[in-house]
Amino acid sequence: MPDNVTSLFRSTAAHSPSMAALTRESDGAGPVDFCIPCNPYFPTPAMFEEMAARLRDIITYYPSSADTITAELCSLLQLPPQCVAMGNGSTELITWIDHLLVRESLAVPVPTFGRWTDQPMETGKRVDMFPLQESSGFALDLAQYAEFIRARGTRVAVICNPNNPDGGFLHKHAVVQFMDAMADLDLVVIDESFLEFADAENEPSVVQEAMLRPNVIVLRSLGKNFGLHGIRFGYLVANPALAGRVRSMLPKWNLNSFAEHVVFMLKEHGAEYAQSLHQVRRDRMDMSGQLSSLPGLTVYPSQGNFLFVRLPVGAEGTVVRDRLLTEHRILVRECGNKIGSSSRFLRLVVRPQVDVRRLVTGLEQVLYGTSRRGAAVSEQATGTAYSSGTAAVDRLVSQTNGAGTRGLAQAAGAGMPLPAAASAPAVGPGGGMPVPAAAGLPQPEPQPVPQEAPRPQPAPQPVPQPVPVPQPVPVPQPQPQPQQFPQPAAYPEPAPQPAPAAPPLAPAAAFAAPAPAPAPVQVPPATGPTPPGVPARGGLTAAQVRGTDGLSMAPATGWPGAQSWPDAAGMGQAAG
Image (cartoon, rainbow, N blue to C red):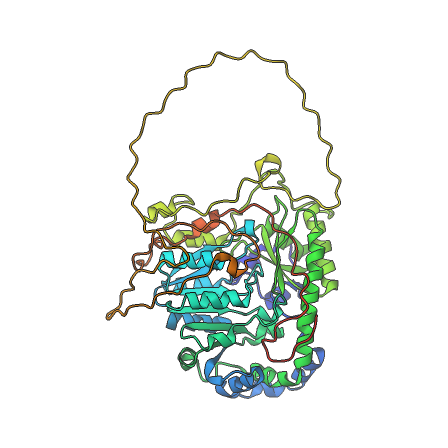
């Protein structure tokens, strides 16, 4: 691997170079992959051998139609085919959802999967980004998210469960309650791409509930669950009208022969698939424990097949990423280009224990200076919370007439304050971020402070009184009724129809959020569509997302006590 790998990351449109590109730059063997969230235990070696034996036929001949492949998948999942649309990866489905069903605005918590922010912006939609706070472990409070949507008059809401990159999980009853509270929106999307790796609840999927509602789509992945990202296949589930609308726009042969072959193999390998999910969940707990033992490293609870970690104070994620790749042949996902994240965060895919031990050894050498190149944590006292390498955020700031973190909302006429930072925590040396306790490391003895001789005190001087400055008269804002959503502004249509009143939302405690969330952001209600190129009125801008700064550490624990996992694929269930 070349010493300077930064150019490989800068030259790709994705967050990381492909494995093929990295292999070409090396001696023919790719690195250990902690970057792409893939199931490492499925397909089994025997399944790969079977596909290899059929390779000539698979790549020589046309596949069957998408309807034929979809029908086989639906037979396996026990879903009605008219409620399902299969795509060439979830990105194809997200693209068509945006083109067909997102009219003016979309709300999404950040950080999250990048296509949910980038795709609608590429087609000129307004994206209202709801920041997940580090101080609450990046937990999504659905009640506050709903208030955020109402205040902005957003027409489409997205939830990723579990969320990517932090692995945050929402219980089924809370998601269903949110779907019903948002029944008057154009669309609610529940992205369950990683849900089959969760074990916090027995039956967490809302697929069955989505088919009964007029405005809900559930997105599911096959490549991630089956360990086959290269095949590019996924599916959505919705009521027949919504699913049919998307399905009618897809090409007749949008699914390839590899996808067809795998789908038709699955019914004979359900037991191996269930065992692979079980092993990933066991590995997640083991990997979380090993990473949590590294001094200064924070590991957030996850229900995905990945872990979101915060590097020690002073560590720059791009430096850690490049050195892990060049010195240890380990590929990790540095999250500086994720909106709402920074270069202090890595997303690490769950892998077998032998690979995790290699990762831990590499991190120890890169972070703490046990290699010839010294430690990556070179600025222990700076307390730098956000890296200048957040390229995606910088791009969005320029696209939204960015005027700095504090000035952007005022320039847009929104008058929205930035999200409140966490209460002042104990800070580390130099006034930076709090330094996590180094497990098992000796703490320095306190040094006595030399006493100085008392100095004569000057006589007190009269304090000048400030000249009163006329204050602008605040514009009164309508106050929402308790337990009720504020209603959105009328959406301009040629023949407007009255929207049904939104049902009341239960108290925030009913959503069973895993950690307390900050107070909701108070904003004026939206007044209509935002012209292209102008920041969202009352919407959160990229600069403000970059400025959010929750500093408290989240507990580095997983989900103990879980004894079972969901049966979303209809392939049987086993005990943990």
